[in-house]
Image (cartoon, rainbow over all chains, first blue to last red; front, side, top):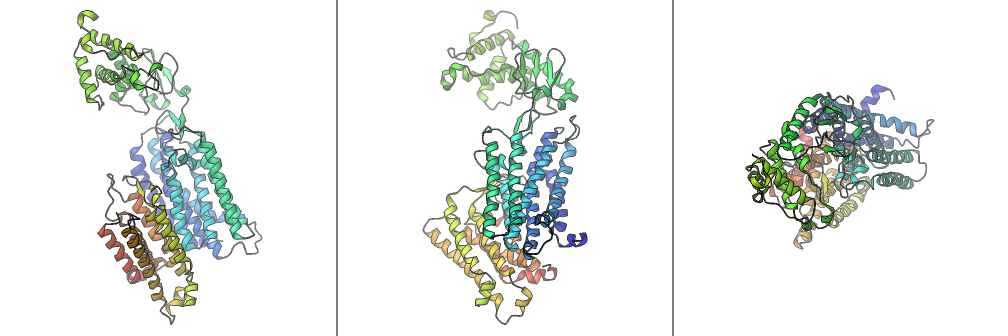
Length: 434
Length: 199
């Protein structure tokens, strides 16, 4: 078909500009607003939500093209071409719509991620989005071939929207990984990257959908059998994808921990390990970390010589301070260092029985006290009782505070001793002036 | 009339209608279908009923799209009235079933089904003046998707314009749906949009 005629008969020509405008405005208002600047994987992952806009448009355009082929009974024609050739060409307008929608979304969101030293979007993710669009285009085309257009258009519109938007809301959560719905959450923080399983699963489903479309386009026998075969193809894709993601952490997102080797460590007292995205702000982050560790040392809390910003960096001799965004505020850094420095993990003797950990309830007070010690006035703790108790501790001389902290940490490491009240420590017992 | 019924594929619509209504009644135990919220509202769980009410509208529009509207416009028999009669009868059936089920206390959402069905039919009727019956069913579908994704405030309240998701007892929603239905039946779309017709 000559190109101008193709433009005239295709729904894509009307829909693409509308979709582009909608995607651009929507992505700017609702994706960009909640995005941390300077993190490319987070920005690319957040674009997954735009599939809710591009996929229904793509599937509907494809159903329109399929309806045209149904109307001219394309398979009955004495075609010189392989039956897949016209089917594939019919998907071109749908592909154009998908590309236009995605390009508009990228244009709205990705420039905001610029400035990160990594310097490129995660192209694997964008590729997966494109393949998902193609898969739904194949299903839409198939629907258009099989069902009258008055039914196939709304069914493709609603059905595809559903399939791409819903699975993530189901429990168990890996169902959302099957069609890429949860890629949105894959890497919103610096310590996460998209998980391979979450990338492979939607590709398998899309492959099943494309196979279903090919089967229907090539089928020469009874139509009901072609429907059965197409359904089988999609089902196989879904089953394979489910197999790929089923063993995933049920509460985890679609991401994996970023290798800690990506961090660079520099400086002394403390040596600070940062993600590349945080490198431009190393001086200010280091200053805040140094302030926090000096203030903590003053009240008897020891801070290791190396501070790492990844929560998954469990190498010995390091303090893991989760700073997950490119530009953490000073208060965030102080709070995070204080929390990490006084963290005591549940001892083995208390496993399975929270009551056995007699000193457990004092954790909140210790944390609130550490916040106050590093100079965070708004402790962020909603546990008012703990904050009040922490203020009482803070009113005591520094040596008393240190003794109180040592005693409680010792109590928290076992199951025999309960919380140590600050009244038990006096200036005389701990020694030293305030 | 028999030819009219065959041309409309009229066996399909009531069959689908009954199946859908049965599905809606039996599906009350199923979880609500979550819709992602697109404009900062809260994510809505839309009961299956509100969505299933669309399906008979698709088949009715399919029936009307099977014939050449220009040819029918000069038919001796009052084909347009037949079409309206079918719509009224189906809505009345839905309402009667709702009354029985609601009276028996069997189905909490009973009145939502005839309301949404009538409203969707009305939107499709209005849209068919512009797009022709073949593409008219896209309009109520798109409306339902828009209502489900953008029709709720952040506190979970449903906006007034999203009548199809209001609680079954909401008189304003029922009034809007009825008005749309009557407007669709009366061919208001043709009066307002007749000059815009593209299909």
